[in-house]
Image 1: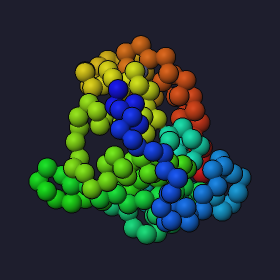
Image 2: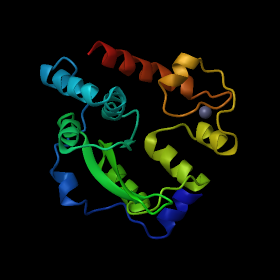
Image 3: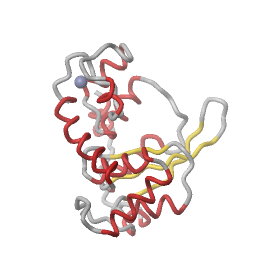
Length: 195
Ligand SMILES: [Zn+2]
């Protein structure tokens, strides 16, 4: 198992997290949606992109340990994420053609930011089974769904089309975790729509 191998290869959970990560406003608490400041911040994020605001809230609420934004993001977007209490980091990657791209990752946890950077920072983008498993772990996807997706992407499942749309993973055939997650995802999705 990759995860165990990484640990046995001598990867220590960091005692020294980079200063820029520690300096951001990490509070680790869930968002207070009654606060007008929080609402304002979420609305601005929605103006940038609804999906970005949705990912930010799912991450703030701890449903996703870490999220990745692949579209360009300026300093304003980064600052808005920080104002919701998330830690952010820009990660440089390359694609097959050699072209360089920048991803933005955000999390409540400095350890997840660090792990992502160690695993994928300055590395080419790949879609190997190992990468999918690691990403699934970091993004909060049920392992059953990740494993089925690796072997048979988009296999028929029992999740409704509308419900599948508010998820970021494809649910596996007889998933018992996704229906539980869906309730939590749905309440955040509805909250965001009413914000
Ligand atoms: Zn599943």
